[in-house]
Image (cartoon, rainbow, N blue to C red):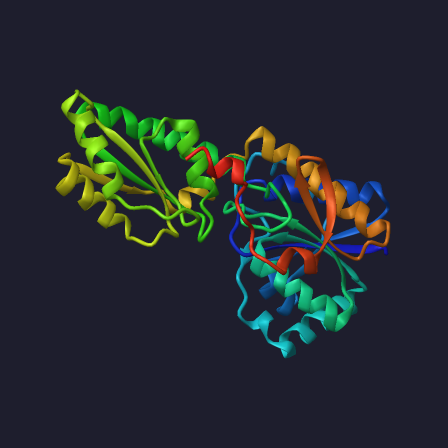
Length: 316
């Protein structure tokens, strides 16, 4: 292994740029020749591959997103385009990849490996934190801090104007961002896909709290719940009797200056990823759990969906 390339796939996250910086610096330290693949698997198909050095990553550690771009690729799902991608790597003599991405990205590289024996090491990088076998994915801490700041600001205006605010977080079908934000913000309601709920169960309690002088409510809902956020707002107004506003945080959760924790995790994730390839561990995912960093096979990771920690769910 002499030439090694990195790409970002799927949704971007804060922490990718620190990871790119570490990738270049650690590759050169290990006498490897680093390459960037721009715009994910799309760039791999279109041969947007460039040899890089220290100057390419100077000053990027504070930036959100990714300087090499990220994309979802429908073409990469087709065998003929994966063959083109393989040929592009062969022309440059690259036979090892580091992949930053989520579940869809991992499924793509699993097929790529099985068809063409491309050596790879994958790093979970998704704010949804929905990757099986790992407790943490790059970008999650930055997203949580953005949500925290948003909720803290909304609480000020909620109290001033005597309103309820329904705040929608991202996460697809995983409620991790919502439940952690609920537990750390002092919100009154949290709705996530993993737990069945009945709004009627909250009506008497919330109505009594208003009678007793409560001025506002903060409700955090994950985008994957069964009801539209608008319906939760209508319920507050019609059943609880308080004026309500909706805030959909959306893609603001993806950007921003990476937190210290995400910078450190990027450094460690990439180090473990390159070390795996150097040790001839050619189809691994770098995971992080209570025991620290470990390696899982790509099949172990994509074979089943992630389940939230039962201890966490009990706190709702």
